[in-house]
Amino acid sequence: MSGPPRDPQAVAEASAAAMWAGDRASQHLGMAIVTVAPGRAVLTMTIGPTMVNGHGIAHGGYIFTLADSAFAFACNGHGPHAVAAQCHIAYVTPGRLGDVLTATAREVLREGRSGIYDVRVTRGDEVIAEFRGHSRQLAGSWIDSTQAPA
Image (cartoon, rainbow, N blue to C red; front, side, top):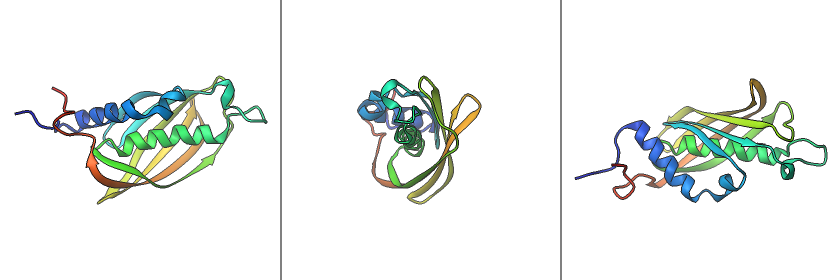
């Protein structure tokens, strides 16, 4: 009898695959998952021509969306469904057309149904933004017997 994966890394990978399958927003923006682990995720996105604002720099909403997506994959990496309860971002330096941005999310605290996650958005070694997200766990899980990897 095969049940849900028990290895934390396998759970994180299976959860990410299930989430990614329905995540049209991140896919549409050209994001890519670099790595996932329990409470961690790294995503990238290239700033395209439709992502710059009137100042000729990356629109903050796109940077926020990249950070939010990394946050989502990190806080859902334990298996149970989790959503954002609140988030905020501090922009440090502007992104530019053609930049490949990397969002690195890490779990700071997970207690009961709540979690706190920090996400650093970078261009190479340069920090573009710092994001903090608070998650809330919901009923349900990305992992069940029909999604378990062999």
